[in-house]
Length: 253
Image (tube, rainbow, N blue to C red; front, top):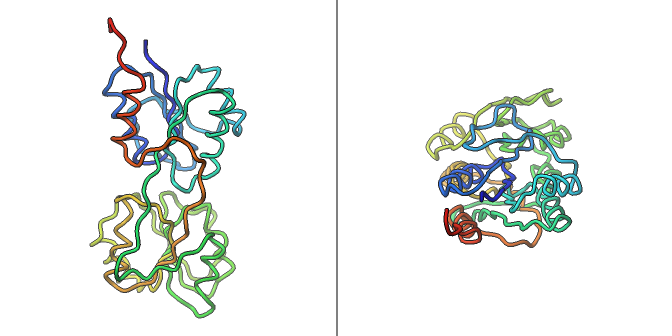
């Protein structure tokens, strides 16, 4: 009997979890993507793209598809999706586990200004013109139109369309991981004075944090949202091992 597992993804860890569980060879896996990225990375298991219609819609999908386990491996800032996952799991009676990627810890030499929202990040840049590197998702850039005095460098996976209504902005499309040496070169070549980003954690995007430390640059760090209190693991290995133990191989297989 193959147990059905739905992975809510969009992160590197979600793909890694799918690979680990696929190797166990006793699960029927499906990975769900929100559909915000135009050309998502290739996945090792069948993929479903698009929303479910809120928590109730996800609950109905879990029930109708006879899902045995829901895995929340979304981005640490996908608070709404994580909240919907927790509610859907409760409504449908589906077990839920989550991957909670550890955040970056402040180190000696870091010049972090921590804020709770993009709007606060905009305000923290101040009124004096600065050269700012925005390492944020496309959906979070609009508030910066309220501060047109700055010179912006925007990096995103997909092009920003329509462009921001700002007089001085350059766009860079790229997908990580980003090496520290490359990030340092980018920051220096662009004359960046301040970075605005999220505390995403992980190694793929940490290069800019290390480079900023080395160059003595300020980092405006948007704090993580509060996520639902569910059974969670801080690594792919720990979560995959738990799932394998929770659904042991049946005798006769």
